[in-house]
Length: 241
Image (cartoon, helix red, strand yellow):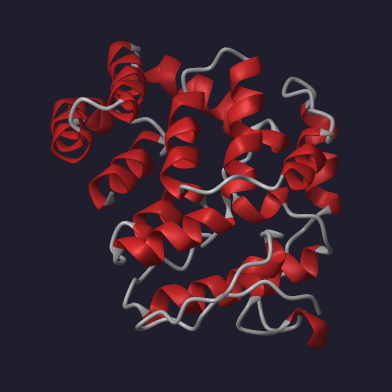
């Protein structure tokens, strides 16, 4: 599963000429991990689509989908209801979890960016990676459904992620996400206003209620589950408060 997560991380990253040139290598990695499976076919279709596009066109499509449509954001905590200060502390706690595993990220990188999160999972033992994936399953399902409505091949990546969790998403959480109205990606003025109203405070001034080692699960509203004792990370569990 580790190779698959790494490949999906790359396929969901901002398209570049270098990425397009690496598509044959990515497809080979998938064959080693998913040989002959439907998941392999879904990801190869996405990879071939990216490879066949002009780089500028691929980049324009990516920005239009994921950067200018908030309900398709690849930042996990953007899909979580709650005050922006809570999301800021969630970023800090998630970054701390990365660092406890020796996974370094750049100062300008937001830890909840899905390609980065998947890259982190790709270096974990499979049971740990699958547990953390399961906590985000409802977000993957909502993104998959929204992308399917747009007939976007990117929905393939989320179909595979949903499959890899081996868990069923919470229907209520999925419905709640899908009830959010889509932003108009062409209305840049309205989009700027939304982002200004929801500035994330990324630091230690998020307030007492925002702290705690279980921030990731609380913030993404995962269904209640028994915590696993991870070898090098603090266990994540679903709890309120």
